[in-house]
Image (cartoon, rainbow, N blue to C red; front, top):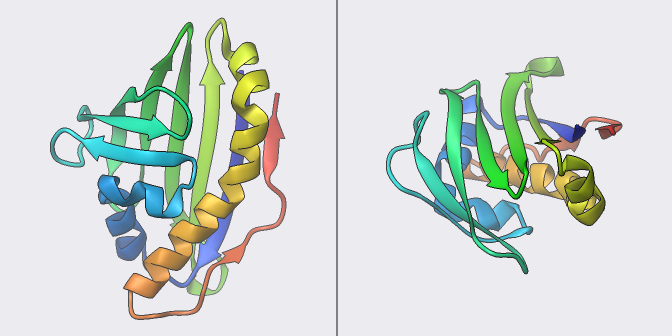
Length: 156
């Protein structure tokens, strides 16, 4: 298994971050690793969609564990592996909202996928979470920008 995560504390409300997450077609605005994203229905557990990662084939995904204003998971199948992207909202210090994204690769070819794409994912993840938090804060009436939580954590 391979995993990487990053968290940001923001003054954006949970509702504002949730609204940005639920607008799947707009994910490329904050996740520069995506060229396109779509959802085949409502933002709810079990609903499927499609991601177009930059430079790669489109991939299908399923939403799992959707808990409004708390979090959700995207599960995408790769050849002999699965990519899990957990999105969580928790209380941060000083009344802020903590936004956390955790990516995990599991399965027989997870080590290969981690070598092939892990460095790029880990490099892009902090910027994606910061852009999401800034977008949510701006959409929620221009509150203060996001502040990164020290130390991206890695597991190999």
